[in-house]
Length: 64
Image 1 (spheres, rainbow, N blue to C red):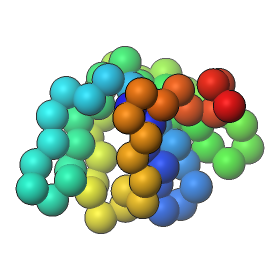
Image 2: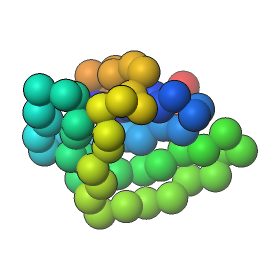
Image 3: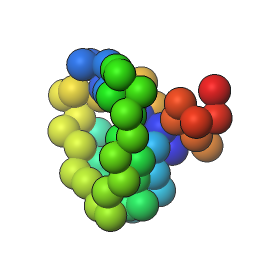
């Protein structure tokens, strides 16, 4: 799953869980910022208020 955030940051990883407010937990995450830099993260909690798009099966910028 790829999540596009309000501040032009993308996170691509495996969805572990979510709640009624679309807060999400992803694992094996790659973070892509606006400069093209990539950061690997083991697990992350995303605030649903900052998610503007969900792409099931997406591969982030590396698959574009």
